[in-house]
Length: 300
Image (cartoon, rainbow, N blue to C red; front, side, top):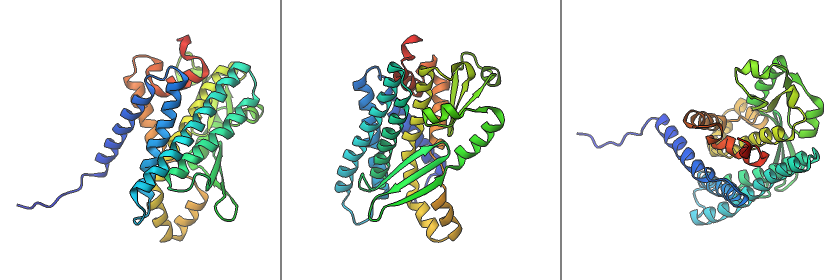
């Protein structure tokens, strides 16, 4: 009788990882009813998942304790800055000032950049990025400064689809800092009631009557920020992608010019799971967070 150990199929590990994410996020977010709890969620999310990434990406000869210590505080810092970006959005709704949206966007980009640097086992200031629609602009500050543009293919495809389905809103896109579309038949086309807007990969679509509504805008931009939060999981594939790129010139070119949003394979199933198991709209923790910052949570 053989005692050879057989690895379980990859989907077993994927499901286990997905369950871990669901349980972790539910633990952090279910009680998100005030700023303290919201801050703890963002700090905890950054610290935990940055550290996991740093362990995956660490060189073999680097001490594990050193990596964990560094990634914990950097991930926590990035998480706190992310929390502050969401609070700025809430202030935009309170003050009814569109200028706050760009301030929040830049702060959010800084927070997510720090978390990704931590997960890659970099220093927190090594690389910065800014996402606008399907565009990712990277600023590399380690050594000689360089600027790199990457296209996000999933968001690009979704925006191509949106162009043919909705009206592109240039004014709103410029003042919010995201690609904005509108539709006069949003509720009918989605077969849903009370749909004022919806965030998708790389854009937000509004019912035309709600283009100037601050609460709706904050709510949907928070969903964009949630996608930014989950981009940290893309760093877990850094090593295999780098190895693949080094052996194939075509893959190397694609890796240098594309930023593939693998994190949607995690974010979307979690959203669907939360929707299917929720007793009400805000039982979905992703919607609960968006409702918390947009001040729509207590109206339902």
